[in-house]
Amino acid sequence: MGFADKYFKRYGYAGVEIESTVSENIGISVVIPCYNEPELPATIDSIISCDKPNCDVEVVVVINSPYNAPDSALKQNCDTLAYINGVNAPEWLKIYAIELPELPRKLSGVGSARKAGMDEATRRFNNINNSEAIIVSLDADCTVGSAYLTSLFKLFNSSNISGCSIGFAHDVNGYSKDIRDAITQYELYLRYYLQAIRFTGFPNYFHTIGSAFAVRVVDYVKQGGMNRKQAGEDFYFIQKLINAGRYTELSKILVYPSARPSDRVPFGTGPVVANLIEKGNVMNVFSLEPFIILKQFFRDIKQPDFSVDNIDNSILRDFLNSEKARYKIDEIRRNTSDIKSFISRFFRWFDALLILKFLNYTHNHFCEKIAVNTVAKELIQISGFTKNIATEPEELLAIYRDAELAK
Image (cartoon, rainbow, N blue to C red; front, side, top):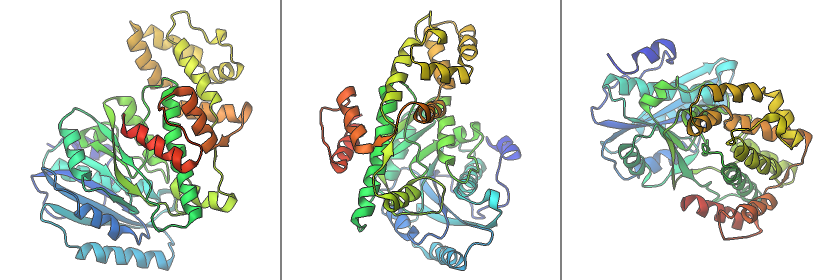
């Protein structure tokens, strides 16, 4: 009996299987959703060029298309399949394709493709009963560094982690200035958001990017597998892993996502870049005010006499009342015996999703969004997470990257 048998009966993606025998030495499976993707050969080439880890590796490319996809996209998918069938890889690395053609509208998109690939990786690990193996999530427009596989293998085999976010930096080589400016602002925003949440004292926030995370297969099964959302599937799945504990980060930059504009998904890198170029290339993001409010709130919540009614900030008090926080906090108190367990359970409730909800609430009722370079500079000044300072987005991005690498 395999470790994932029950998972497949309840959650498993049916109908796609790789027929070849699974190597007993396989320890890593890299899953890549792929729709109408001409850049995949560069992704595969970068994996082939990786240093060999102390295990065999499989790459599962999920070639998918929605119902009524244009002929040009279907042709590109056919070219991708032909490429994969003819690729020359080292003996320790096997590259497979599974096809999901004509997906119905509700199931089309990267979520279903990522789930199908991760479930297939799980099935193959289940066949050899290797519950400690690693599933790595990557996108078809990324390249990876030479230490990509060895660093992941070392991290997972030297600690009892459930998963990790992987260091990334968008590849801007060959793009026009407007695209470079747009992606610089977007990546700066991602890193500002990370540091701003950590500034509040919130203990459980990491980057949540579908092209840059990995999970131990047994923990993938425990969390019910990937969801099928058309976009944002990575954020919701990683939040489940984080809330369950034992999640970490591999801060070394090993993944290089593309900076290209795109309209393939409702949100994410491609749509943000396209929208910035169309609307003037200035990215306005969450201001610091709500993060400062949260910082004080997360301090106050540790006090035994804390009460929602005693909160001075009316925006926070109204938001908490709308979330029935008084009853939730009382429930958490009744079911914990010390402050440590209380804080742990509190942050499983007031998690990154609720923080995002509060940020949206405050900017709808209280404050305006601000240019990312302005607010990124302000955060450095008030938090002191780095001694460096700058004004231009490119310089600020370099500072924020260095701060994460130094963690």
